[in-house]
Length: 464
Image (cartoon, rainbow, N blue to C red; front, top):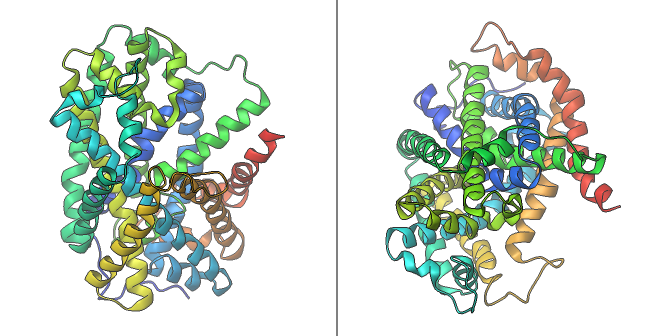
């Protein structure tokens, strides 16, 4: 029988607002501000946005609620939580726990890249124009030269990792909750402010139209499947699903706080920031390119190469660029904290360690695996795993394989083995009525498993 109360020694959030802001901080990260806009641009703008919002309020909500409910009901980190529900599913807990172990190091590496750009905008902006090519594009050679060396990326990676672990060392209330109450409102203000400014630029309306209005002309079945799979995959990255994070944060949640309402607030924060980030980047690139939609196809480099060119073309571009990269740095930090906290929580619970010792071990793991990602673009660039650089391989195996499998097995566990009543009962502990009970049953038992299979098979189907 599930443990209905946390142990007295278990740390927890001091308020409902603290939980919501911390969980929202986890969800709002590079996935929202870096990944979401370039995927929206790549997959048809308004079509992708429509698909994502529909999936977020159904598919995403159901999985997010399930993971938080599991954590709060068991009061344990991910390994102990899944084992308590059904011992046959204990390997699922281990698989889920491996996801943040793989993601946290390379996430901190990318966080270091963001800090480097922020440093350039705060100081010597001319650095971004430095290059050796005859036809140098502002920022292009800076990015490739930066990640192509070992020393500078290592320094900024260590700074970002150090900040992350420092907050986690302070604990749930004094560290994570306190920093979230400061960073999340600041992050929202920056996002709203920059998006309003971007929309005032001449020519931004065309980019906004491309971004917000769905256009299904020329949409084939293959393109539809790719777009749907991209939107579903983005939900994992954006909402921190299937990483063990929400199970961990759920275990810190007070039992008297309204579970369904809290998850809706997290979802609103996450989706709102993602949509606003797209309203910053897509119209801005349209302005910079003179309305050329092909400029949006820069992919992952959109933020590090295309956007510096956008800011360069603006009046007051250095100030806007500084505010933008500060926004990205804050978002990356809140997510990195949640990833590191998940690893620390697992180590503390499994090995009965003090928080400081668990944080030191987590720092060591991140240092070793993170350096593989750093060196994979410089000293060890000739070493690849299945043709991929280390960072790309870590990203692929965690996002394209492990997380969909974790989500699929979680749906089977709660939808068919323990039954959805396991989650429904936990929701009703803090509320007389569970409004989305029917939605939860349909999504966990039927829709979500099909979605997971689509994500896993799409690369093979589209290749054929």
